[in-house]
Image 1 (tube, rainbow, N blue to C red):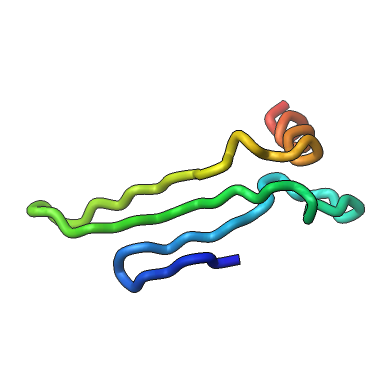
Image 2 (cartoon, helix red, strand yellow):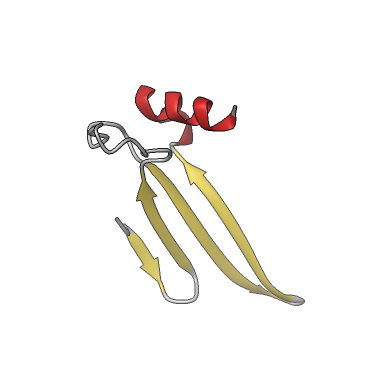
Length: 70
């Protein structure tokens, strides 16, 4: 889902990280919000990326993430 978009300034989206098991319903887990913000500076453009609510990843996704890293 794309909750907010401002042309040339802000783009954000939500997703369920590591939601890879097709047999699991991840919809009850809190999604992570990712925001890309850009602004002009004297030297060009500054791009900032923020991950919001990343610590609230649900137990199933957290388990998938641990398995993926190994």
